[in-house]
Figure 1 (cartoon, rainbow, N blue to C red):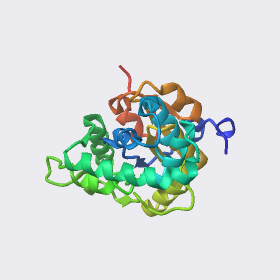
Figure 2 (figure 1 turned 90 degrees about the horizontal axis):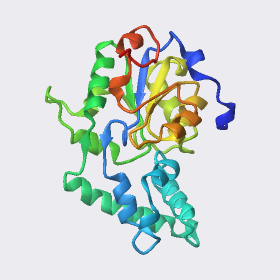
Figure 3 (figure 1 turned 90 degrees about the vertical axis):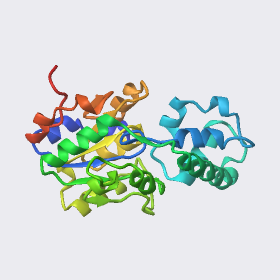
Figure 4 (figure 1 turned 60 degrees about the vertical axis):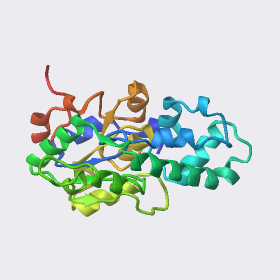
Length: 247
């Protein structure tokens, strides 16, 4: 499904939402993924050209090998497909170093929204193509003593699926494991590919524009776009609607 074919999600979803699916990197966690991809470019391409905008548009939300291939191709590296596996391995090694150094933190607004949705009694899933997501979420300890990962009733992070985002497979799997029809779910995503995946799965898309990239999320078909998850109206969610809160 192309972006132009995506229906107006807000009109379809109004009043029927009752479950939530959260992406990890950029939504729940400020992780060192982008930095790891950039640092790992040494010997492959020009790291100065690997901007946040490029990361969000080309790499974010994709499985590791697909992201490596896409990044090298976007940078014009010769034989990008042939070099992708080595680049992906170098990125993973660098990411593990950064995680070990404590370069992972949770976004406070994300923790507040996850807690608020849980208090509504909604089933909640976490869904990321990253195989590092579970370990990073376990490292985030909450006031209750639990880890962030413990907040979710379904976890489909790092699953081996035939296709990555913008294919909706990962979100459809999350909805299935929650026992909720896709049309009753909203997906919180910070990457256009993730929003496209949500829309392709007939779910509402909550675009999280933490990097001045609202336009890309809107173009991808997001129901609403916010710069902070504190902007989401929990009162409206309680009524099954995804809207901004009134100021």
